[in-house]
Image (tube, rainbow, N blue to C red; front, side):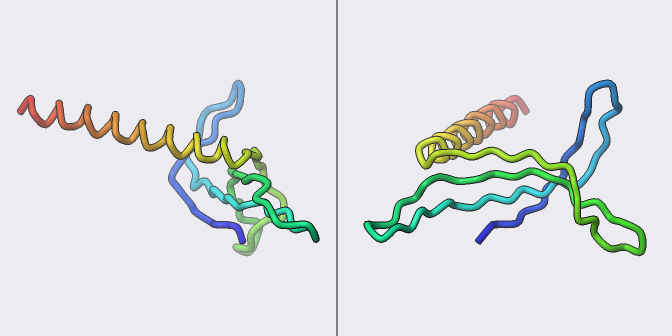
Length: 99
């Protein structure tokens, strides 16, 4: 089952002006179930924008970027995001100390 999340973001194409849009981020696990056993094969991350068609309905087609990560790459990504969060928190504390 995919996790559906929506965040503020922007889209920038070459030679085009960037525009702000809500970006959908879906991620889900790939489980390989065989008779001999089941293993976690990896994860998928998908970024896309849900554009509205006429009459307020969602278009079926939309631009999308997707990547597949091994379980180890997934954990490395989570660790890297945590380190970045901690680094930003430390920088914020330094700015708070300047007041």
